[in-house]
Amino acid sequence: MLFRSISNVLGKGVAGYSAIAILAQAVQMICGLAVLRWLTPAQMGIWLALQAAEAYALWIRLGVVNALNREYPYLRGRGEYEKAVLHVQTAGTYMAGCASLLALGFVGSAMLLADKGSDWQLALICFAAHSAGGLWRSFIDVTFRGGQEFARLVRLQITGAILQAVSLPLVAYGGFRGYCLRAVVLAVVLTALWHVLRPVKAALRWDRAILGKLLREGLPLFGANYLNGVAAQFPRLVLIVAGGTAMLGLYAPVSAVLAAGALLPSTLLLFLLPKQNFDFGGNVDASRLASEGWQRACFLSVLLLPVGLVGWWAARMLVQYWMPEYNDALPALGYAVGIVVLSPLRLVTSIFSTLKAWWPMMVHVVTGLLLTGMLPWLFWKLAYGEPLVAVVRGVLVAQLLHALAAWPCVRWAIRSAVPGQALPCISLSGPVR
Image (tube, rainbow, N blue to C red; front, side):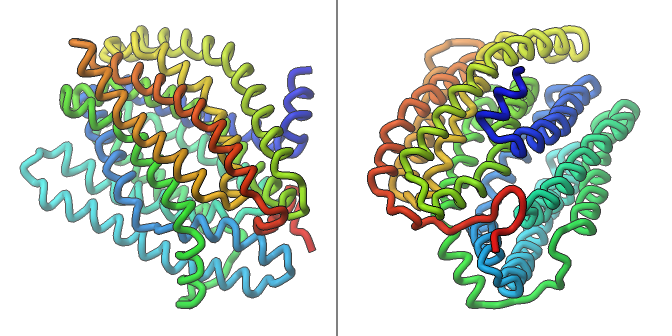
């Protein structure tokens, strides 16, 4: 009965693919928690700090993948398959260069930070492979379009989850060194699988005109995504200032809970956004799309509330009995659950992309940037102790205010919408001819 209700709200195909994809990613999230059994907060803090550095370094993408996510299905829908493939080849050339630069940046940092100790040296070198592989897979992800290709992507995600689980002994027996080695092994194996099974098997090519087009059209969406990514790292920066990498390491269980909350909206958007773009290209009213987005968001938030409470209890038990070194993080987990309940907001704000409503989108993004940047720091300064709880509490309040700010921004986007201005996209069942 519950699955039928979810299918009615999301659509049968979306619900089916999403359920399997979320299950696969949930396994990966559990593995991410399990490794904390064998890592100290200080060691985990090193990896979390590198993740924050990676988020800032990803500016090099400059929106090429964002634009490809729109252009590729549009050209396929028009029947211009050769041109669509050329877009993929050009974007692939650019992203291969970005991945190489990212890897070189982390390897170079290992040489510059030689005085940081062996843990930092090992982590930086291994993170080079981890980040470069993830960047290349993110490019391949956007070339999966249509029912059969989505099914292949889901199978890859299941394979990735299985590899995450079977590689846990590397951490159990190797500690932090095993953790870093595991990251390299997963990066190499998963990237190879994604590359071999990619939908578009074509050699890399360079086309300056197409690259310029992708850069122009992708920059607005990239700017919004990049600022959101930067804002998400602010709490980590506050924790580093408050207590160094040891304090940041205590954030790991909270980060795992937040990552679990992000699974649902991010996975649903993978399947819902192409359909939303296609519907608007077919002159479906913008206000109707927004109304459907709010309905989905509210429905999923209500659904996540009991799930979040059960997850909060399970996370507390896991921390207490599996990773006691992280017990100081327990008071912050409840606030993290509140953030998870608000996470379906992203399903509503995706309409900015569909409507090409760049000004409402940027106002909403900058509002979130300011809230997420100021409130965790302000709550920490006013708490006089327990910086982790204060920071996560500040993030929760920032997310709540950001959700309220979405309403006028979405209304603004609807008023400025022109029917059919979005690029058509393929349907979930396959390309539109």
